[in-house]
Image (cartoon, rainbow, N blue to C red):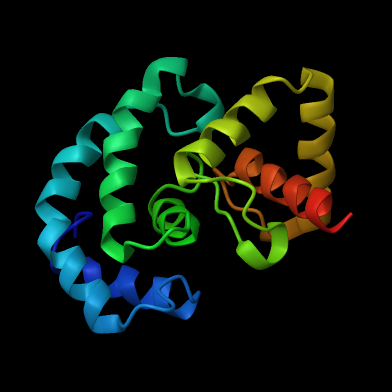
Length: 167
């Protein structure tokens, strides 16, 4: 079962709904708008999927490939918040797309692409030894629950922003 198909969509909609990413829109509103955009999402996913599967490896000019995809996802819920878009993107590609949580970190970003770029730049500007220490510490804390390909970079960025917001 591929991404952005009629068979795939009910599962991701249920996940988004259970994470309260669809609120305050109705299930039917989100479902109808998403179904209208699945073919376009399939098209726009191709250049995104050709990017490295890791936010820190994505080249600087990738924003031109990512932005149209993110804009269509934003259109589905059509509210002035990056939360739905971030969760949608994160669930399909957690190493490429960090998630934003309004309760935990507030909404210091006007849209998701600003947040995405911020996380990428923050990690890029972090010294290698600090990065490695953060990954080792995080891996130790998680322990046996880490899976191969765990999205360390996006999760560390989320935790740092949560700390800054609640610090």
